[in-house]
Length: 160
Image (cartoon, rainbow, N blue to C red; front, side, top):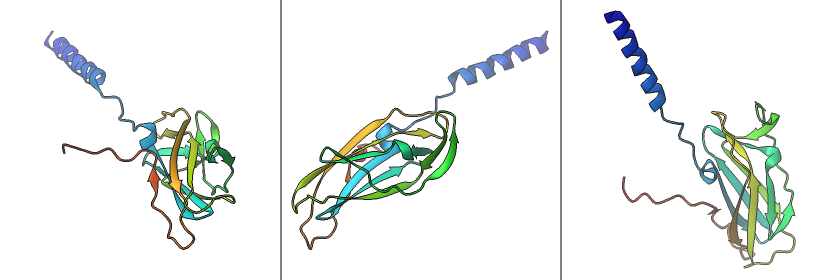
């Protein structure tokens, strides 16, 4: 009888532990796939995604627009990954940076840079497509590239 009670107590403890197990901590979409852009020169914008560790972006889901007009920059090759949702897909991890030419931009002009993307976490959770945008000011002819403008700047931590 005491063995039966011990087994029951052990099973109850195990079931409680499993029931109380926390769901995985997933980053918000804009933190998992942080978008930023900067003006490099009067006719060039550089767009960048920083992909958090444990996450990946789909190459064929990336779309960019400048000032509301779609553009198709040359994207670097990604790495092939078999994905349960999309099959064999080319993906990016870490950082991806692309340059986009703006033939009609003028120095000092503010340009809206938008990116649409979709990605997943390695644990098997995929995010819906998202759109992020920033506004950058085109530099003067001899000016250095501007700083990256982040679509979702880091949140301040008031208490640590």
